[in-house]
Image 1: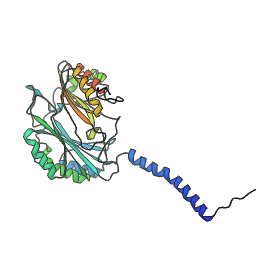
Image 2 (image 1 turned 45 degrees about the horizontal axis):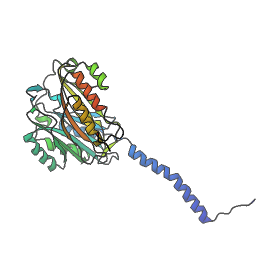
Image 3 (image 1 turned 135 degrees about the vertical axis):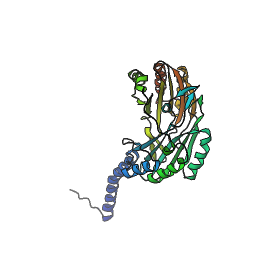
Length: 328
């Protein structure tokens, strides 16, 4: 039997190769864990810092690691084509906080509801406090007074972002301390105004009663959208929603649809086929990947018909090889 002899150099080379082979899977596993890992949770102290700075309690969605504070404009009396519309129909702003996937930073993302004359003072305040403007646009047609929506975002520590955001809105009507009380709850709510089981059966989701309105909020679980190292999820602004006001037989619908660029024109076509008006097509975020386009719409008619139009638009999302109706 022949015995193989190894030199010391060969032995060291073999050890190095074995060590590398063992280490590579661990390194890949760690990298994959960082990419697919769960966003670090906000701590109780960070949530306290947010709520103290803004002066209002919010809600924390543990599954997304997102804290959101609603910022409704209860001071406004809004009409569409002369008809009074409740504020929950679509005239409430919000601000959310979430950490980056690596936990080294955090994001503030918000949507503010402003009168025309309030837009530029808030822009100046945001930039003075080191925050950025992501978008400025309308969500409605025919509303009186005219309303605009300003999206604001920034990166930093949670406590610092909370202070900077609070300082940005402090002199505006958006700041909770500058808002009148919401008033007593309505005697008739969305639960009485609408046949909720019928609408849920059409939309294939469960909504939420919000005062006299009924609202669906739906994420894009089929997409992984990143922005500045933060995973954009339902409660930090990556969502499609539909709000119903009025009555079951005479309703209004308003909402927003989050789309990839190739889905936009198919959604537009579908909404128009259901006699729902397209109000705006625009972005809400900067440097999001993949880039998301948002479409706002408005419709009037029986709630069941409006729900069918909304469901048909949802059915256009996530289709393979969608090119927005263009033939290639």
